[in-house]
Length: 454
Image (tube, rainbow, N blue to C red; front, side, top):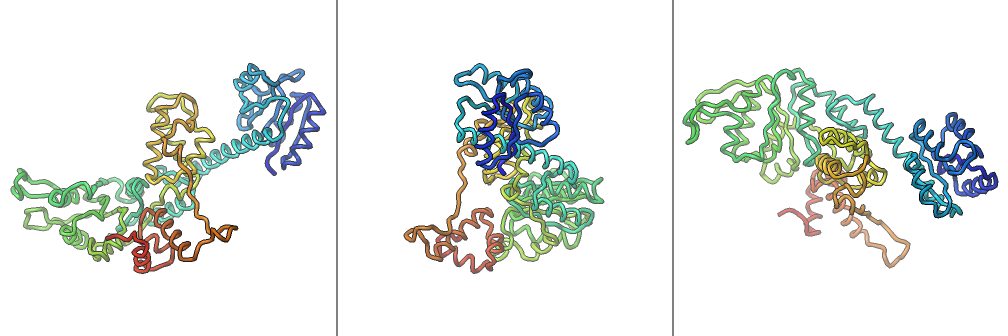
């Protein structure tokens, strides 16, 4: 069943003809010749779309549009107007109609309009349901999502938030690993103590060592006074090591000792200082491969990786993208003082189709741009960044009905392996796990394809 249509037209023969044609095309149809009885039926039954003639006796089609818009804004109305009657069509849209069609009606074009209206209502209903579910079941206010990957993340966080175990957060750049770390800290027994983040990739080795462990006066040229490190600043709380995979190999033994001994020695110092901090670390690197390649210490990896939590990429979270987009639109509408209330159906579909390599960060930037640029109450496709507007989903075709186009198994395997690798952001460990291959086998195949790392 394509949808439940309510037809309102004072021409009974027209109603009967539309009833016959639309039922053959898979719609359920109810019709009335008076607007008053149609509106009463609308209050009692659940319709997906109303198809209403503008010229009706008693309550006019324009008045019916206004009443439906005021009382049942969730149901789109398609107005039927006379051929060439542009003024009437504009009046119906202003009265709240979703679309209009002209007499004499082309049934194929009418079916397209009805399908579009039904899809519009279904999408709006989906957004409402997602919002209700979020309000009812969201376990962490800071994190938004109702998809299976996010429910798995919430379950893992619930079990470990109030413990002191070290956690390694894995995920692509922009997925929100620091927000997950902040939330874990807020839900822990250490929540009244500091949460101290440090980006390990943003500082050179000498400065990072001083930043983490502090230094004594005279330890190096610019050390004019003693300085506490971030381990001491986070005393009793949580130290978040972002991009931990970028810590220089020469500094890793000192970090390992600090974690195992729960004490630090400042640069230039002679004595150990006890520290009580919980360590949360994050990386978008494939640390298992880095360990095998000698770029990361194995003992430090296992010390950080007492518990592993993977923060899912946005492209795996389905309709969460619409929930997040709605939150960002509200935020930026308030900030920019713009009367933006939501997003159009076409723009919403573009957001669902796009792959979001930049993840939540990219979506947030896109919504900030859209709210700043739009001239309407709802974000339109033209308000989105050009690469989102122009994006076309790629597909892998396993076979064809034309024997000349069929591929050998080796080529099908090559294309699928490279597709999986692209989807997981070139994370060789994740790709091997999905493909159920050991990493050495995967690396060997990638070498054959000419895409293996040097």
